[in-house]
Structure formats: C-alpha cells, structure tokens
Amino acid sequence: MSAARLLVVEGNTAEARARQVAFGGQVASEGYAQLLRELFPGTVTVDICYPADAGANLPDASGLEGYDGIAITGSSLNIYTGGPEISQQIDLMRTAFTTDVPVFGSCWGLQLLTVAAGGAVRRNPRGREVGFGRRIRMTAQGVEHPMFDGKPAVFEAMTVHLDEVETLPEGARLLASNDHSVVQAAEIPVGRTVCWGVQYHPEYPFREMAAIFRRLQPSLVAEGFFPDEEEEATFIADLEHFEREPANAALAWRYGIDGAVIRKDIRTLEIANWITHQVLPGRARRLRG
Image (tube, rainbow, N blue to C red):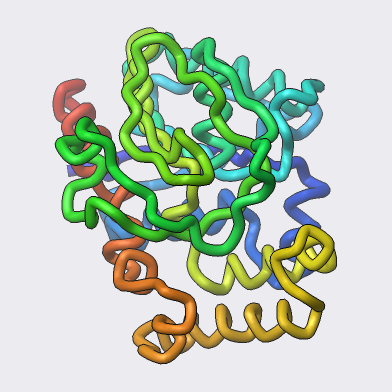
C-alpha cells in the first residue's frame, strides 16, 4: 500500500520564518511535517507549499486533488490587514474547497478557513492568549466529534494568538470554547470538503513555545503577562525543562497543566484523529489505499 500524500500550507512569510528560526524555533511547516511523519511513520509523505511568498508556485485544483489531506500552520499575519501574502492563501483555500480533500487548520489555519468560507475574524478584544489556553471546553457537539476522540472534555493546550474567529461560516459547527475565545475549535463543511480547525496549537512541542516567548520579548512584559523580563526568562527556562522532562510533576503543578498538554500522544490527538477519521477513510473512498 502506498503512503498517503499530505500537503502542509505554510502560513508565514519568508521573513517571519527566518525570525522564528533566529530565536531557536523551527519553520512552522517543517515542524508540522515532522510531526505528521512521526504520528504515522511510513504511512504518510508530506509536501510543503509557501503561499505567503511572492511568486510561489501553488497547486491548482487538479494538483490539490492529488493529496489526501491538507494541513495549515499558524502564522504571525493578521488576516484583516489584507495584501497578497494573505489573499494568495485565501485563494488557495477556496481552490481546496472545490476538491474533496479534507483540511485541518491550527490557529491561523482556523482563521484562514473561516474567512475563505465566508466567516469573519477580528482582533480579540480580550488581548493575546499565550502559553497555555485554559479550560478549553468541548460543546455538546464537540463531545461527540471524532476530532476529540480520547481527549478530556475540558483541557489546556499550547496557544499563541492575538486574533479570533468572530463569526463562523454558515453551516459550521462550534466544537470547543473557553473564556478567552468563543471559537476554540470548529468543523466547517464548505464546497466539496470538510475542514477541521482549532485556535490553539496541538502540533507544538514545548521547545517551540519557548522560542515564541523569546521572539515576543519584551512585548509580553509590556502586555502584563510578566512583571519583568527575568520572570519571563524563568518561564522560558521551564518550557525548555518540560521539553527535556515532560513528566516533571513539580513543573506541571506550578503551571496547572496535566497530560492533555504534557503527553505528546494526547496533546496531538486532534491531528492524529484527523488523519485517522478524515484522511485515511477519504483515501480509501478514492480507491488510493
């Protein structure tokens, strides 16, 4: 049996990708592709495209039809500012909607899918949500949804976003919320496909969140998340410690997190469930498996 073909859509510009790497992080699409291969070793192959780059060679509908799933990374862009680096991504998603290829979006990915399908995104009036998204609660529909198979009904997740979904597209289903953002997870049926999206980052390891905090200094002090940069440096060091020792009970107690964040198999369930319940069955229906 041949491997399933996945396409990861990089949401960031080349400049933003380089900036994240400069702070010790990883290009978002490369990290996403690495995780997909780790979750399903020998079962998937992964390509990457860069629609935020000028002159990017992007697949058309027939090219997208050759994939069994499309995943969208986060991004430092704000979708309401417009510009070619954003419009090219919207156009690519609208092309994807003409296919029957399932789509999964993390953070920016959810926002991109929302706008491309006719919904709205805004700057969150509550400000930034960063670090660990607290008490994300499944809705009644979310509890029954295959994206959350094996996930606690209330959980924490790694997150970083300034914007949020204001209005879901027609026909979408709200799957999870918390006190910071009403839309923390949703299913969006559109065109010939079904999209799953989350506002948080199930794909992130602790080391990536540490790099994001380094990149955002000193903004997070100015926004009141830390009293000073020394306190922020301590938090970053603790994130790095979690990467080395995820089962550290003292750190877990200090930050009020549990297996939903600490255990990689639970943290990444939404993506694994997407492949299990959307990508592989769709591949079988198209007689590719």
